[in-house]
Structure formats: C-alpha cells, structure tokens
Image (cartoon, rainbow, N blue to C red):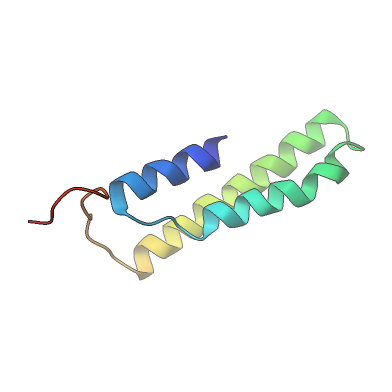
Length: 78
C-alpha cells in the first residue's frame, strides 16, 4: 500500500512516477508465493530489502536527474 500511495502522491505533485515504485511492487508480487512458505521474520526482512532497494534507487535518481516540480495535472502552468 505504501508504494501505491507514494506513487499516487508523486504523480499528483510531480506529474510522474519513479520507475522504482512499480518495480518494487513487481518484486513484492514475485516474492508472495515464496513468502507463504517462509517464517514471518524472513518475510519482513525480504519486504524491507525491497523497500530499501526502492529508496536507494530514488536517491540515485534524484542525484543523477535533477528535476523541477511540475504543477499537478489539470492546473495551468505559470
């Protein structure tokens, strides 16, 4: 839910969604069948590793591709 909500916030504030958010959702979806067989602690660690990967990708992206804020969709540009 966090990645979906954060993606929606990014789209509303910046008119774009970072590629790492859908990638993180896909990684969590791929881990789901395996997670059913693992102890809860390992499932939490796997989810944390995915979220750390998303955060690291965002930091790298922000530093490599500096962007200006865009107005939300539907609002006129200045």
